[in-house]
Image 1 (spheres, rainbow, N blue to C red):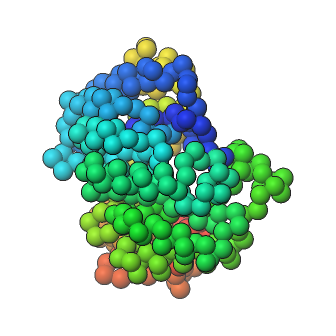
Image 2 (cartoon, helix red, strand yellow):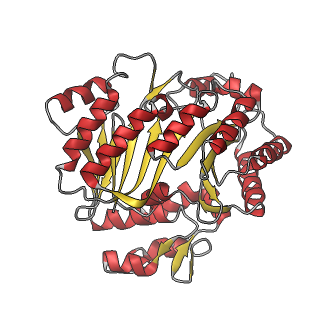
Length: 377
C-alpha cells in the first residue's frame, strides 16, 4: 500500500507565521504547475520502489484549493492510472475559508475528494488579522455550511492555540465555537515563532509576545480535556478525531509507512532496506527544469541504518495515542524496545509505559515530547 502527498506551493498571500514552502499568486509557474505534477507522476510510476494501490492522497500546501476541480480530477485519474486507487481511498484537500463557493466544493466532491481540511485557525477576527489571514469568523462558518451542503461528511478544522494575548477563558470560548460546527476531526497547533517568518521577527523585536511555557501547557491540557469530553479521541499530539475519523494519511507518517511526495517542496519516505527519506527542493524553477529533462527532482536526505531506523520508529510512534507495538517492533528489527534502548527505558521509567503490548507516553507527557524523545538518540 502507498500514500501520496501533493504539495501545492501557492497562496493568495503568505501568512506571517508560516514557514512552509509557498509563494503568492499570481506567479509565472502557477498555470503549468498541474502539468508538472502529471509529469512527476508519470516518472514516479516507472520507479519500482513505489507500488500501489494508493490508500490515501493528500493535497497540501500552500493553498491546494487554488486548483480547480478539473485539475484535481485529472491528477486523481493520473494516480489511478499509474498506481491504482484503493476502493476505500481517503482523499484529503486543504482549503482556506473565504475562498470557497458551493459550486467549487461540489466540484471537488465530484472529483473524488472525500475529506476536507479547513484552515479556520481561530474565530477571533482580531487575531486572524494579526496572523495575516484573509478570512474572518463568518467566512469559516459559511465554509463549513457549504462543505456540508456539498456532501462532505469528513471535515477537519485547524485550531491554533497559544496565540498572542489569548487567555484560557478565551480559548474555552474558542473551543465552544468550534464544537458548534461539529467537525469529525480537529488539528490543533500551538503557535510558534519560526525564525525566518515575519512573526519570528516580531517576537525577536518585542513587537509581539507569545504565551509562556506554563500558559502553553495549560492551553494544551484545556484542549485535551474539552475535546475528549466532547467525544474526540486525542490520537496524536496535534490531532483529535471522532471514532473512525482519524486521518489515515497522517497515520502513515507516524507509523513509518511509505509515502511519495510530489511537487516542489514535497518530502517522501521509501521503505527500501531500513528506510530512506527524500525531498524535492523549495525551488519552482529547479522543479520545472528537472522534469523537462525527465529527471527525478527528489534528492536523498537520509538513508537509515538499523539503529537510526529503530530510533525514528519510536520518535514517530510515540507521538500517537496507540503508541509503538512491541510485537511489530520486534518483527521489524529483531529485538524488543527495552533490549534496543535499555538506558532510555531506565531514564523514562516514570513516563513510558508498556500496556497491552504497546509502548506509550501519556497525553500530558506529550508536552515534554521533544525533551523526552532525546533519550533514544
